Structure formats: structure tokens, C-alpha cells
Image (cartoon, rainbow, N blue to C red):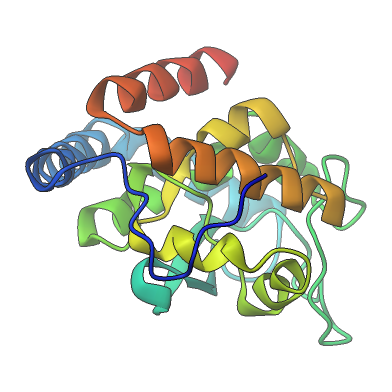
Length: 203
């Protein structure tokens, strides 16, 4: 893969498209929060009934411009999943998952609270998946092009999510980076629509 300079602008969208994308994200997120409120309530009740600890899990991720933000998910793991303090990659069949967490993870329903992140503007519906600084540092030891992703807003779903699945190894993380950079170079509103439909179909 060819290397781009850190200052290079490789964003395939122009200013108008980015503005329309943000409007679509806001309207779509507001609509989904209302329509899916019964689902949120059901998951909340099930979580409180079947597991101890908070229902919503928050974690610092790095977003547009390299700025940190708090990402939200329905908690799928035991409370002390990283009790030794060392960040660990999530796995498809992670032994740290709770019973109901396995159900949420299988259908990606644990990601639903990120609709709030989209409404706030921390995330978009489509974009690269935001990562923790710890893993970004590991990735950049192999490929410093990761910082080019900071030109755009991270997303709930992505081209890499569809094609690469869970990134439970460094090899997959580097492959995800290649796909994320490919998306950034070629992204358009039409491509976003296609990725959203493919994501819904997969779920």
C-alpha cells in the first residue's frame, strides 16, 4: 500500500457532502432513538434482571481530529473484564461475555447506544470504527497512516466491519486500516447508503 503524508487530505467527500452527511446523521439518529425506544427499554429491563453492574458501558475512544470522546454501548461483558488494567481486544466468542451479552453481541444490538453518539456528532452512521489510544499506538508502530483517519468522523458501521469482521488480531487491525483508508479515499453519500443497507442485511 502506498504511503500518504500525514498532512495529505485524502477525503473523497467535498464540503457540501460532509454537511449533508451530518444532517442525515442527525435526523436519522433522532428518528431511530424514538422508533427504537421500546427496544432500548426491553434491553434495559433484561440487563437489570440478568446481570449486575451498569446497563450502559462507556469507554474513551479517539475520534475526529484525534480528539477523545466517550463511546456508549450496552454492556455485554462481566464488570471486571479488564481487571488487570491491560486493554484487551474483543473476540467473536469472548469468554468474558455474559449470557445476555452473547445475544446482544451476536446481533450487534450492543452498539445501539451509539445512536446517541451520532446525534451528538461524536460519530457518524458510517465511518472508521474508533479505537482506544492504546491500540492506536500499537497500530501506528506498523503503519502511521492511521492518523489520516482523523480527517473524518468515526462511524457505527464501516466497510471494514462488513468485510473484516471482529478485529481480534493485529493482522486484522492492519487489514481494517487498509479498508478504512480505502473508504475514506472513495467515500460518497451513495457509498454510505450501500454500507448501511449491507450492515442491516448482515444483522
